[in-house]
Length: 218
Ligand SMILES: [Ca+2]
Ligand SMILES: [Ca+2]
Image (cartoon, rainbow, N blue to C red):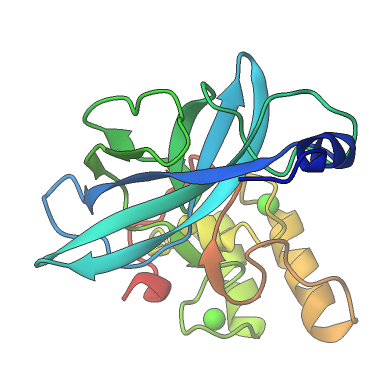
């Protein structure tokens, strides 16, 4: 397939790309409802080491929702040059993450192999998107969000529908610092709330705060 010498040149340039491995399956909530939105990625490990996080996507077909991840692979020849762009054959899927949380798979995917397609159906948590800081939920940040944090903390008001969103500084806890950082962002030019920021997105550092309902998931 290559002219003589080509392989040697490629060896010098680095590892050779191989056909992607494809991981897919249905993805539903614990109640069996299809999960139709969210950010998806696959964590690939070699032994104890994280090799890469391959982005995936959700796709609606045949009346349900599917996750699909194409994992880039390359040879494991250990040549000098560019590497780390792909996984090696034999690397293992550690987890499929939906909005930063592991999807519960019915069975483990087999070790990665070039061009291989593997299916394992999973269940996940749909309520993974939030609007950081939107403690008084309306998909916008204003002083009512800071007031909602304070009244939740000090006035014994009912739990906000998405407590995780009240964690305005992403520390994993809701305290007065969140109200202060919110006011600083709104009125003093302070830094914007950390990811997913003042917009809907996945919380890549999920906490135990909980988010019963987020307008982002509506
Ligand atoms: Ca708000
Ligand atoms: Ca906080």
